Length: 212
Image (cartoon, rainbow, N blue to C red; front, side, top):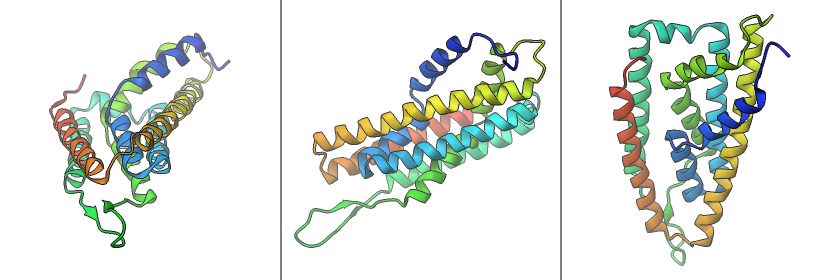
């Protein structure tokens, strides 16, 4: 249908690619470990919304600009890297918030709306995601497809849906593990700061990446 072929291989490959660690997984795990699975779910929804932007842009040919224009790629790359570094600095600056006197301090929580937009911007400002879809998805669309853009959207939506299921599972698992291990507020704070350092490294890596 729509000129799509090897759908099973596409789904399996997509799941394997989603499992690979990256800024999306780190964000979900950090939010789930420090604020519970609902925070991880908010990050997941934001990431998937950002992925959908890339899918639609690629289907409409807008992402092709990033693969052919060095200037466009560099601009988006630096904006994305700057935002990831900004997030990393925010995590490094995390502090404990004092509750009632009889309670232990907890890490200052972040509103779910802000977590959603963190996930969205982390994904949508990464030009590597756009190039990934341009390179990966067309391999499963026949050259004689009657509607290549529609086939691209269908495959991209399948990839995104499967990724959303995996990421929600990751959020639940991380939150469950965090609860079972009874992570103390101070440990949670340093976990947040450690992830902040990783985000700084990821931002630097994105900034130094080249167009392929």
